[in-house]
Image 1 (cartoon, rainbow, N blue to C red):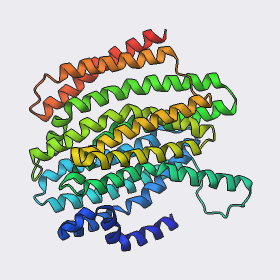
Image 2 (image 1 turned 30 degrees about the horizontal axis):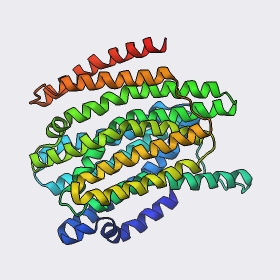
Image 3 (image 1 turned 30 degrees about the vertical axis):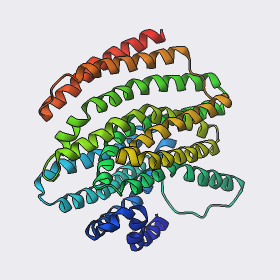
Image 4 (image 1 turned 135 degrees about the horizontal axis):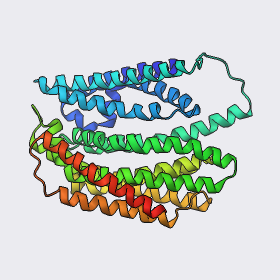
Length: 404
């Protein structure tokens, strides 16, 4: 935490240079550049608390306590949505930006202290010690450094996408809001599945029980896809309505609503690939293979940059979500191939049939939903609830029958 504080202070000083490097298109508007620097300086303190939260989450995971740690990423999304709803009382767009930036930092503080209180409840002491530098510590740091590089590639993909999008007015904001909406179901389902699965598969691999590994993987695939597929279809069908009733207030125009909705309709298609990639990558990590996920992330980043640059002259800002989708499925394919090559995954026929059935049900109900006229936030809530009430029991019953 002390090191992070020092790094944060350095970044605070260098923030004008960093923003110029990441979003050179902003340099054409001095006012926008100055505001972006101030907002970034506020939000960067979030890094300190979210890194501390990640550390505390890892301790809870070691105790097989997953629910609270898995819920923490959702808190940021919920607090941002609440802040946006509260922003209707602000007349200035700059005031709204400051509200959102302070909300991000506040969410980090709340996450950290909620997790810390849970750690203290487990009577787990936190104190600084000087570790003995032995072969196990060396191996841990080696794997840590490799996984650190690999985990940063998604952020690099977003940063480079922001850099490209900064040359189109309004595109950075449109992509940010669309990514927040997409990350909500992934944080609730994908990250939770990956966290729990890694712990259980690690134990099964340690016992050399491959049958248990395959059973857990197939069960995770069925259950997670059963939940993520309706999210994908629902976001595709209701994107325009969701953005209009959540954000279209004050200075937010119908054109911005349409722009964000279009980005969501494209980027939501990557949700199944992101979720399945979590299962593949956690399986490789559980098998002590940290190099393969990093290599696939490098290839995914390279392909995303290629799609950004090639498609931007044609699609504009929509090249960014398009690149995210295409590179996401490339990464998913490479991870699956690596798992199969090592004999770490075996998807049975019933799992494929179950996922196909869930996909068909989601699409059929989504198609029916597209004919309904949604003219209020109340109607939007009714539409979402009705979709869930019709889908979940149907998909669950069919899944059970297939497994039998």
